[in-house]
Every structure is written in structure tokens, then in C-alpha cells.
Amino acid sequence: MTVYLLCFVLFLVGLYGVITRRNLIKIAISLSIMEFSIFLILVLIGYIDNGLAPIVDPGSNAQVYVDPLPQAMVLTAIVIGLATTAMLMAIAIRLYRKYKTFDIREIKNLRG
Amino acid sequence: MDALIPLFVAIPLISAFLIIILGKLVKGFHRFLAPLTLLVLLIMALYEFTSLGGTSHTYAMGGWIGDGGFPVGIFLVLDGFSVLMLCIINLIGLVALFYSLSYIAKYTAEANYYALFCLIVAGMNGVVLSGDLFNLFVFLEVSVISSYALVAFGVGKTELEASFKYQVLGGLASMLILLAISLIYWKTKTVNIADIRNVLDAGYSKSFYVFVQVLLISGFGLKAAIIPFHAWLPDAHSSAPSPISAMLSGVLIKAVGIYVLIRLFFNMFVFSHEIAMVITSLGVISMVVGSLLALIQWDVKRLLAYSSISQMGYVVMAFGMGILLLLKGDNEPAAILAIGGGIYHMINHAVFKGLLFLNAGSLEYRLDTRNLKEMGGLSKAMPVTSTTSFMASMSISGIPPFNGFFSKLIIIVAAINGRFYLLATLAVIVSIITLAYFLKFQRFAFFNKAAGKAVQKIKEVPFPMSFSMIFLAVLCLALSLLAIPSVSETVLRPAIDVLIQFELYSTTLIGI
Image 1 (tube, chains in turn purple, red):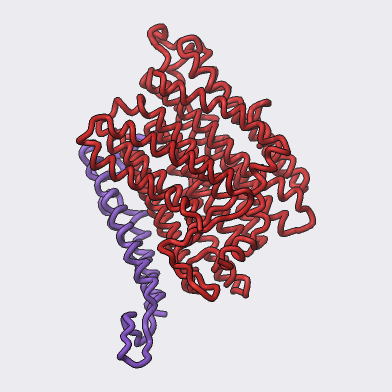
Image 2 (cartoon, helix red, strand yellow; image 1 turned 180 degrees about the horizontal axis):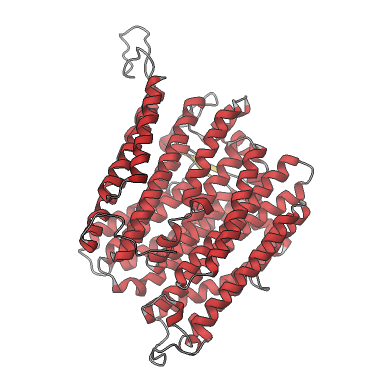
């Protein structure tokens, strides 16, 4: 239970960052933190106490294996997260070139 | 097994790849390949539409069928509702792409534009076809990430700002969706939509799933820009290049937002009264507030973007009413009417909002401004744009004989039949407000006296742009035919049946 709570705390840390930070790069980092808290939850869901890596070996006796599906899903999700972070960083750098600042208070053309 | 189904995802992915690789070597290759891809996809979608006839086809990826009623692999499912969505996506995609042929020529890096366009279509086709939650999430990200890039395609100050805002909120939405998917997997040990339904039928803890449903409503609500989650939409849809705005407003918010919400709440979750009330009230709020916000806009594309929010409110409200009526159980004809009206309005909205954004694009192409105050007197100079946008405006504000009138009428009749008198009144009032702001658009853009600029020099837009607009305008009239009972029986009925007989989705898919 503690582990799940810690994941939730990590999620809140990220959310706090997204809401309060004023720097584009810090917002991107906070989003990544939130993302990874969810990846951790996803991995924890497949975890079974004393479970082995799910590679079935005919020689070994019956043992407990962890659930491999969340692991496969989390790998896919990490790749997607990489793509979104790269995209976010690219836009942040382009914004810096246009406005000469990372401060979102200075970047507010769109209103209404 | 239907071998055509995976091609809906594979063909655009391959052509995106080829455009990037070969586009630099062969001149004009991308201008030829991308429309051809969309044309092939449209023909395939129409073929599936005629051959399906109320049944559903499935395709097991990699031949992983599974046994004993447990699906192992990823399933792609094509039924009456998804085939209709496929037709809209590829039709609007083809028209927008044909329009881009001359519109996008002013930008650099054309090849990247066409490749991203193919990717966005691949992602949406995948979302619509997927029968597996996690696979759906992956395809959703494919289409959404390419839309982030396309919104920022102009690389100006506003485009980049809008794209950043869109990405932060879109990223938040993706996380909520992923969290919901992992929680569902935790409880049910499966991510197959049909299988989840079977597990839920055996009994479930209500409070846990209410939490999951709220997560999903906020996640997909952010993608679909239902009102409390709408902050990114007016910025992103007004900053993108116009054909992309037509794609985003016309198809993307439906395919990755509304469609998924409806599919999950009808075919995966067991109905509950509270959630149905939440969906209906969200729809009503975005219908009313969206139209009021559109009234005060002076930027053409922002006005259209807010009107998208308002029209999507109609669709969400119709489906919410459908769920409420199905739960009551004593008035199934009204529920069928409400759901049919929702689907019909969704198709119509794709056509006329696509057309309106293309019109706005033509204005921007010739005048280099989106501000209504700087336009005026264009009805003589741009007859095609003027006529088509007049047709689309009348259609969206519900004037007969255009398609928008009939779909709104069906929704209002369903509301009256189901004894939702307040909702019916609000729908009529919002329709009048819609007429008001589209008359404002017409008056200031086309019929007013010219505001300073020399209007005489302005010519009509080139052929690909005017042809796409005329095509969609004709479609606006032609879609009114769907209001005839015998036509809607063949076109809309299979889609309605999928949603009304919600348990069939799980039983037929598992029984492979």
C-alpha cells in the first residue's frame, strides 16, 4: 500500500509543478514526472511478491511468475512518453527563439 | 477474419514512411502519393460500408485468437458504428488534402506536412478500429502527437504557443487515460473491450468503476474539448493551417474524443444513472457556453472553433439522453431517435465544419487576416467562397433544406419524446444563437462594405481549393437525404443497432 501512496505523491508532485512553474522546461519536466508515476503504477499492477521474470524454463519446478503484460505495456508507454517529451522540448526551444525567454508570463498572445 | 481491416492503418503508415524517404529525391512525389493514399482508403471504407450490412467483422493481429473464450491478442473490430466513422475520417481527409495542394504551397517543408497528415489519418483509423484499450491508447497518441506537430506547422509566435498549450493539456489527458486503463487492467486482468464487458457482467464494485469512469470522462473530455476541458481548443484550432483545422475540428475531436467515450460507455461499461447525468449535463453546458463564447469572437477561426465546442455539446447531450432513456427502459423509440440524431449530427458536423474552416482558410489565403473587422464586401470578389460558406452557415444554424436542420430537429424531437423539455428548449435557443453568430460572420465577411483594403484586386482561390469547397457544399445538401426513413434505415441503422444492443458487441467478439 505504501508504494501506491508514494506513486500518488509523485503524481501530485508533477501536477503541482505543471500548475505552479512558470518556466517552459520545468513544465515539461513536471509532465514527465507525472508520466513516470503512472508508469510505476502500471508496473506495480503486474508485480507479484517473490515472482520471477516470466521466462518459462521447462527444467525448473513450478514457481510464481510476475505478470508480463503490464511490462510490455509500460515499455510501449515509455516510447510514447519519449515522443511527447521530445515534441514538447522542440516546441519549447522554438518558443525561446521567438520570444527570447522561457517565462510563460511573457508568452501570451492568445486570449479570449 | 477480414484481411482488409489492418490495411486501414498500414497503408497510411507506409505512405508516411515513403513520403519522408522518397519525397526528397523525387520532386512532387508527396503531392501525388498522399491524395492517392486517402483516395484508396476512402474507396476501401465505402466498400466495407456496402459489404458489411449490419454484421461485424474482426481481425486478430498476428493470428493470436486465443481459446476457451479468452482473447489473447489484439483485435481490430469493424462494425456499423466504426465503419461510418471510417468513411467520415477518410472523406474529410481526402477533401482537406486536396485543398492543401495549393494552400500549403506557401509553407516550407511540404513533404513533412503530407507525412504528418498520413500519420494523423493512420492514428484515427486505428482508434476507430481498435477493440483493445491499450492499442486504442497507442493509436490515439499517434494521431495526437502528429496533430501537435501540425498545429505548430506555421512556426510563428501564436502557432507555437497554441501547440505548447495543446501539448500540456493533451499530455495530461493521455496520463489520465493511461491511469484509467491500468486501473481497469488491475481489476479485470484484460484490456480487450469485449472481454472487460463480460467480466463486468459477472459483477463489479461500483465505487471503483465510478472512479475509473470519471478518469475516462476527464481524459477523453479533454481530447474532445467538452466545456470545462476546452481551454486548448480555440487556440489550437485557430492557429493550425486551415486544412488541418478542418481535420482537427471536423474529425479528430470526434474520432479520439466522442467516438471513444461513446464506444466505452455503451459497449464496455454497464450503464449507471449518475454517469449518464454527468454526460448529459456536460453536453448541455458545452452546448450553451460554447455558443455564447462564439458570439463575442472577431477572429473567424476562433468563432468557428467555439462553435465546434457548442455543436459537439449537441452530440454529447443526445447520447446522454439516449443512455438515460435506455436506463428507464419504457421509451426505446425515443432512445433510438436520440442516438440516431447524435450520430447524424456528428456526420453533418464533420462536413459543414470542415467546409467552414476551408472557407476561413480561403479568406486567410487571399486577405492574410482572420479579423472579421478587416474584411467586407467579398461576395462579388470571391463568389465560390461566399456561396459555399453561406450554405455551410445556414446548414450549421439549422435552416431547411440543409442537413443541419434535420439532425437538430431529430435531437429536439427525441428530447420532447423523452420528456426532457428543458433540454429541448435549450437546444432551440442555442440553435438561434448559432444563427446569430453565423449571420455576423456572413455580414462582416461577405456583405458589408469593404473596410479600407482594395477589395477589387482580390481574386477567387485556385481550383483545388474551390473544388474541395464546392464538393463539401454539395455534400451538405446531399446529406439531408439521410433524414428520409428508408435511407437512414440502411445508413444509420447498423450504427444505432451496435449501440442499442450493447451486449452483442461482447458476445459476438468473444464467440470467435
